[in-house]
View 1 (cartoon, rainbow, N blue to C red):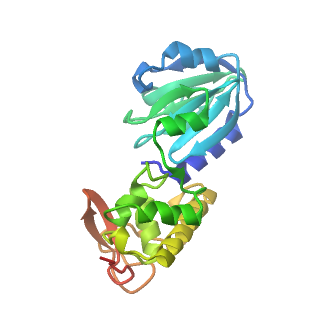
View 2: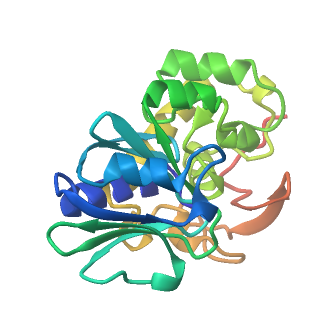
Length: 261
């Protein structure tokens, strides 16, 4: 599932292709619209206008069209395309035909994401009960949020109502880099370690976003390029192991990561 770095890469893609380009026609599949949002509302907001700026919050991307904001969530396999003809017509669920003859498309093969419309980004984030963006939350606030959380640290990192943007893959990366076992209990982690975790979280997410969320460009010391059972740990002489954490496949190194119970 696309996570915060992927969404930043999608925002960069939108800005480099479709930003400021007038939209001649809008076609949206009703199946990907959030309840209460209509095809007519999205088309009315977009057609005749252009996407003028982007914002991100966690796993959400917002694109301003005049006084409205298009909202994109990418589900498991969603992404954008930009071409003279839609790149994947079967799985294109929102197509913005631009006046320059190109199509800017929202493509989602598994239809697990959505398209929505809002007047106010901050109000939308609050309405959806999303936590603070993982790249913008301060260290003090991060510690406060974590200290009030029960359960395991990986589950806390992935709780979008607590901190928005971290999913299964980047949670594993962050915890390996921080040297914390994913089953560690948050209540048992001291403030200094939580501050370290905050710093590692932002460093990993920022670097991944700067590298366009492309695993082939990630440092060799990262887990993501080695994320399979039995692979050599990128940080020590151990092996990567796959375990389950709250039903999620999780990759760890039992040498590098200390379990704090």
